[in-house]
Length: 498
Image 1: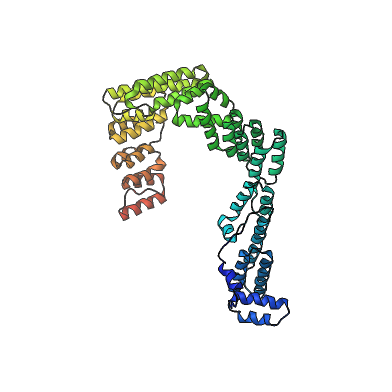
Image 2: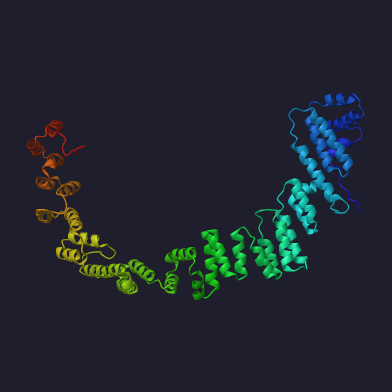
């Protein structure tokens, strides 16, 4: 059997009769050099300008040669030309030498792969390795990998798969041989080998091989396919990869009955935490089932409270029903949560009543916001009931009333509020709130009730410079007096003190 191809251009330039190309001259120079003829130097000088091209052409011609003898001669010619060059990289020559060694190895009669340089460049090393492994020449493929410093993973995996397909030895022996061989490449994935073993019906062998799989992302899907559900979930959790745990949970949820699925994840903290997080946002029914299975009455109660708070304005009855259910779930064991739930029911009923009276939108407001809105609208009796029913602290009530009266411009109510001798909040707060509402005249009324040491500055802020001067004088504060005089001369009013 013979193969015919067109003579490559590089080989033609070197070997054509009468060729005067730089590559042919370099080839002749090597012949003269081997014979000790001084003409070798003359040939080199004649092609000095084109010497890099001549070296490249000789290397290229060597790659296309089938005869190891002529390969060696052409490589020596290229090496001779390179020795006369100062800045020529040796990488191309080293690469060509390696490539020729590989090609000569596969062209050997016992291998019989007649691969040309052009074909090799097209299929590359990976393609050659596939050809060798397809012929069960794994040892040669492995040696080529080591020689070219390529990863041997694909060769080792293919060898292991072939071993499983063809071996008649016991599974324990096959497993030991595969593990010993694949241990040469740390980090190599055993999953493809285990998958082949599983496909061929060697379930036990596949399970043993998966024990050596370093990547949980490759290990878990196969374990799930083998119905090793508990082991798959444990491996996913050990990896600390949330996405992998979610993948496992979703697979098991679809595959198993709900009760069995929930029993399986019981005691697995990470799996439970991720399931709760997902269910809280996507599937409340699943979360209720989980809490029921775990006998977590407090969790069920909290979920019912969340659902009640999410109910729309037109679903008040459903919200109240859920709050009542939540209160029962909390029971005596969670007295604090139960009391909060009862308070929320009272608040929701009160807000419903206020809305029915036409007092505006109240559903969804907090206790303090509801109190504020009642005070703002002048519903003092309702506000008092909220204060007593929900045990609003005196200080919080005063702050809310102060802001509500100022916002509603109910100055009479504000004066009644400030008439108490010892209020729980400072009178300076009345001045600040009135000034923030751009009502300096109202703010001025409360300056006289403030601490004498703060009155001069407060009078300046409300623009009452005479009163500010009098207050400063009564305090015998020369610094404040000078400040008030400066403000008066500049005509500026209401400047805050630094």
